[in-house]
Image (cartoon, rainbow, N blue to C red; front, top):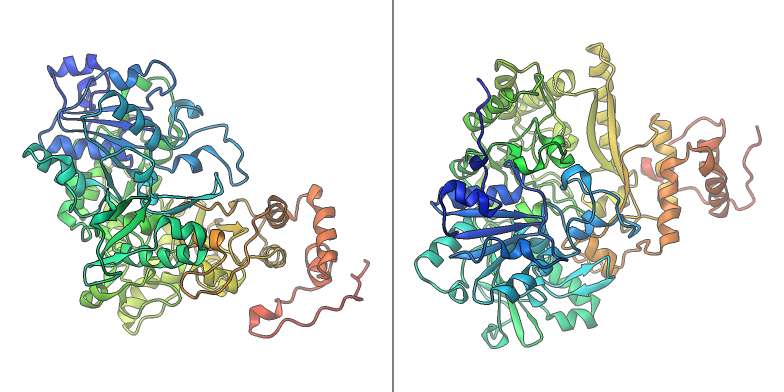
Length: 637
């Protein structure tokens, strides 16, 4: 397959000059994005633009408009015939801008050359206000991760306060949450038919703001749930925790209810989501005529996020892991929508034709690498289920975790001309690999998948995410027991030896997660040291809107149990936890030794810096932790 020669007009237009090249004298939709414009199915603005283009509409994209000058970027294309669309980008802007310590980041992976400062804080709100001031009569539709995760009352870590649903602060007419292909097409079709934007109140997977008088009279019925108001949540944290449980459950149901939340004299109405995309629908989105490259306006510049996924292929959407700190299921849903084998192979063939492709695919993955085509054995049970996770606290007995289709994809891709090796760069759920089914054929397939994954698809380092070593903390995270990671590590090492490979597992860990204490982190350091890890992939927990972990962080209450949960909130508490990741650095040693003495954990002091033989902490082998002896002193050797 040879590389297609692209012209400037093969990208969606970004300037008036590009409109003239196409002979256009008007636009139907103009999309404003906080990210650079990369015409690739991993970048939201490109997907929405191509979907609308496939509807026969004239669409333009204005990437990273300047909001600080005379606003020429907002004026240069005029007003569209149907609506403006706004997305802050592939990340919440505040996560993009600031570290967990609230320090300004020095770079931005979604901007040319990683340059920071190319978007404001909360661009969804900033862009909407500008456009409504310039063009008050043109509808504004917001979407993307920032709008999606802030659709109802939410905790904002960077302002350290509870904020109302974004429609209360943003003058947009309509909000799309989740993956936006189907709702945006429905909006465009109905506006084209002459309906006014304020009549589009019942489109699935959208939210609107209306007068408070429209709210139902009952708190819950067959089709509606009335949440505690924003003002009630400000007064009572327990109300916010109770609200979150409803929001998460309805986001992960096949047949969800409409949510209502009043704020002041208005009410935000969140319509139920669409059912999961069919194979034909998701193929139609991925098979659109993307150039798969950044717009030529960035010639000579590098967009780091694009470089990361340039030679990767996304096989599916959705994740049924339901990790407490993750936004994927809240945004994409827990039901897996998978592409066809033909669509995947077509995209791989496009990659092999790229001039700088050397034969190595960096990832055949998804939100979790090994969930392709997985679903319930009895899908009628799934249609009635409201569990946010199919894996926690235990793997659902109805889950059909069959890896055979995924193995078939790997083998078909590797057989294509031009492919030397395909790697799995996405995170792997090792609990799915270790689960034992009643059906022995499934178990054999899983073993075969695990062996092929480790032997043929690891680029030297396999990413997995145990996240912690304390089973108590892991339960709050909705992650499996650390003993499963230990089992998987033994399995990985055995296959690695048998295949004469020299590969590594790269585990990811989080500090300061709700429920985690400094002592838990000290035990994590000792246990991972015993496993010969010097941790690299670590992070301090960052509360992001609309996750279970964030709600616990803010309220101090677990929404599902009502119990209080300790959380490290002060900067010094967070730093005290984080330092244990780096016990092996000389500059951390005195501080850690001092802290362990303060906690009277002389046993851990020995395990980290002494020469005593390792023994598992008692609580990890099902026994009570031995009483601490405050008079006990470390051995001096």
